[in-house]
Image (cartoon, rainbow, N blue to C red; front, top):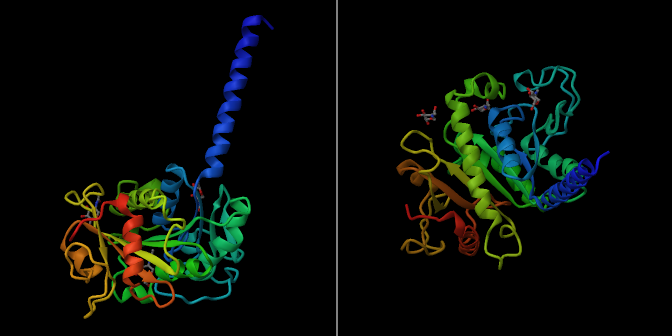
Length: 320
Ligand SMILES: *[C@@H]1O[C@H](CO)[C@@H](O)[C@H](O)[C@H]1NC(C)=O
Ligand SMILES: *[C@@H]1O[C@H](CO)[C@@H](O)[C@H](O)[C@H]1NC(C)=O
Ligand SMILES: *[C@@H]1O[C@H](CO)[C@@H](O)[C@H](O)[C@H]1NC(C)=O
């Protein structure tokens, strides 16, 4: 080998070593996220969310129900093999085991049980496997197909899964998007109908989620934990349209239920009463953020609200 090519080889080797070191560092410092939902592991929304998180540099793993588990709240069932029907949209055949994954991407996992069980499976079984024994930093639940506002919070599997995560010791945020057409939910549409309304809108929701997480993960350094203990956040995105694109969306701190009392965090000259999420989302291009007690699923107190307001300062909350 000539001198010249040996030098080149050395240079290339050093560059490769440096690149590898860089990769390893990024890998080990990336935030670890379990993604779950209630609509099932094969809806386009959760696949797009996973891809968005990976693209944004997070270390993500999907753990979601094999079938649509909407409306199951905090119910839990034993995981069973798929003896009588395939996974939703034929995403796994009849006879598949109770837990399985996508053959070409083992980070896409299903469990044939309810959303709460999927969250627990992700935290207790998959996270140690994919995150080198470490616990996840966050469970992202959703974005749900359809909004979760007011009394819907009580029955939503998206919320149920997020509350379960908090009970298992992992902070969690539930996301829901107003738009989604059930005819177009299969993940296959990402490939076969990429410009369909559902896919385009679901992509916007995945991007809004990334915007939210960027603010959550860069909160002021005086906050040692990601979120106050014992609460989840219920985030709802508006219907997106040409006049309300993801870039137009503004964030508002809200409450889930109406109240006669004035005990909320004082902000926006509200006299101690936050606006309800369902009325805010109806009035404009707003995404709502409500703070919900993970045990009772009722609005959390003013301390928790104020705490979240400070942590999410980068989001740039506006007054509705
Ligand atoms: C799941 O079921 C709920 C209610 O049963 C329905 O509203 C929703 O559209 C379904 N989701 C999908 C992806 O089919
Ligand atoms: C598995 O993942 C690959 C690549 O991500 C995709 O092409 C395929 O359709 C997926 N299949 C199922 C059942 O999820
Ligand atoms: C997204 O959904 C809205 C309805 O909520 C619809 O008006 C809009 O056209 C959809 N966007 C696209 C790009 O299809």
